Length: 301
Image 1 (cartoon, rainbow, N blue to C red):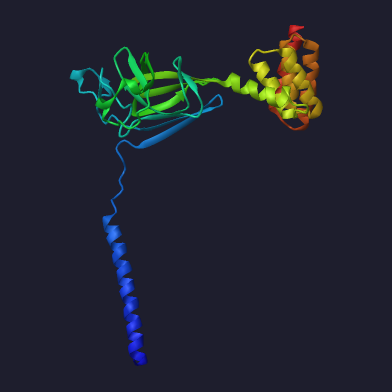
Image 2: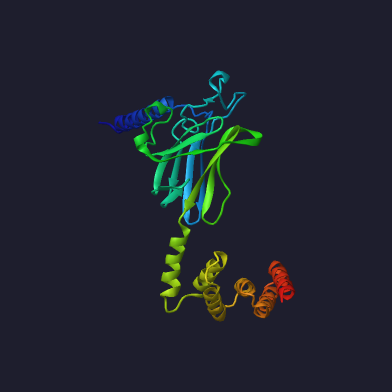
């Protein structure tokens, strides 16, 4: 075979390979679907409630001149008395990272579907193990429920165009899952077990620890102060923390504990120390808070 024919053969093979790859790419491109915005886009909202993560994943329909909820003759999107997937597309899902209590009912950690039956004066809400129903709510089985309860709907001050689920009324251990659409809202309460978890940590890291850190001592003291527990123990822990590493925010907490114990002289002394530390750190917000506590203690003496 001549050199020219060898080169032509190699060139033909390369050209053939190139054409094959190009053809495959064109075929794949031709088969790919066009992506367009969804009329009810997917959303996810997460909230730390106490020490537990709660996540809701759902699709958000919009009114687009329609009525959200109403009786059978109103042509509402969601007629009263009919089971609803509580959104659009697939089932609306709620996930708990720990065991919780929902409207007084125990619910194990895990992921569940939220199905509702909206009514004019009352909503039925269930959390179901069956997360695959989507629009096929006729396949709903009460045997799949892990919680079932009723809540009262309320009127919104302004119309909500796009269905929205959010977390409201947050406390250190609770939150409401709030569902809003059109001029109607409905919510249910989630309670998390903060006390057991925090007290277990305090027991491990402070009570049973021969050398607890200043951070753990301070955290334990703050928890006791905020939750109306043994103030003498809270003061002991905070004094130990401040002896190790005095920080202006922790010394202010010591002042707050002493004030609550009606040790006004001790509260003033601690607040003055905190104020000096805050001044050195150029934190005028804490300087102001210490001035306010000193004035409060002097007035109460």
